[in-house]
Length: 187
Length: 187
Image 1 (tube, rainbow over the protein chains, first blue to last red):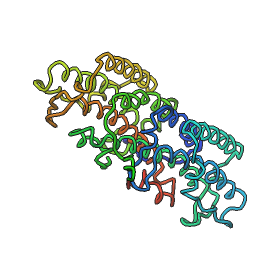
Image 2: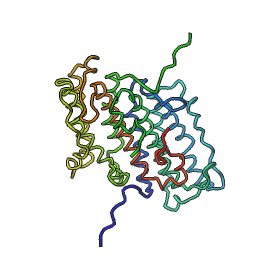
Image 3: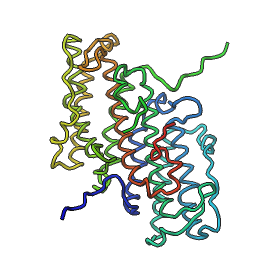
Image 4: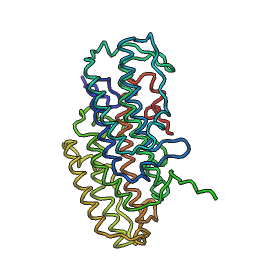
């Protein structure tokens, strides 16, 4: 008999492992962004794309109205009531006139409170199967919502890394060919 | 007369701004990875792709043999001597049997020492124009080397974010459509 090789490309959702990611995001973003010159933190990829400052506002808005509020809808009303739609531009007015350190502080505070609230739900495995209803995507589960919360953090960490790196698209010269973050290839 | 809008998609290389990125990478990776369960830190994207643990080994190898050693070649020998080739698999044996916290500590120590050495060069703008010769890419400058150093950090931060996020490719369910880090689209 040969042992089945471990699949390292996918993992089943385990709430403590998702929380391990969620709990690290504020300090990761703080380490990356606090004190950086504004010319970095207000950089973007052109057009309507977001800067690191914009992303922080979006993450804060999610802590207020998305993840925990939707988890509560699932736990109290199941799929009888669709989630409220998430406004992807609400953060522009909410962040106007604020500083990046202020946004980093607020995000850390909200995330900590939200993870405390998540813990207070004492979720069982069968709770994670509870159904909810997304206004556009339809049937979802609490497990999917929580997996998405952690993945969404990483999506925006990737975005911020890319926005910053692409500022030097011209300055890296011939090395451009080796830098997938600039050439746009993945793998 | 109308003011020229600021281009936020590209920036000219300014050494202190690049150092601001380079100095933050160790603490960013530390905040993201230290203490995470091994099942996260050894996760990869299949085949020969790298885990966060592998990436840390690669970053350490770069601190030893790539960035500062190449800068010194440029400063002392210009383009009369090509850089040594960078071995993209040397880190596998160097990291074998080590722990992730140990790699994070070493990377932080090396980066700090390398930035101290970079500072000791007291580089002028004309130094940044000095030519070097890459064994595959050909003519490069010290400015391009240093811009690439910072960009390379962000490339691997993006990679680690993506490797972690894709672990939940199945678990996010219908939200997959919204998560660019999983769907593979950029923008």
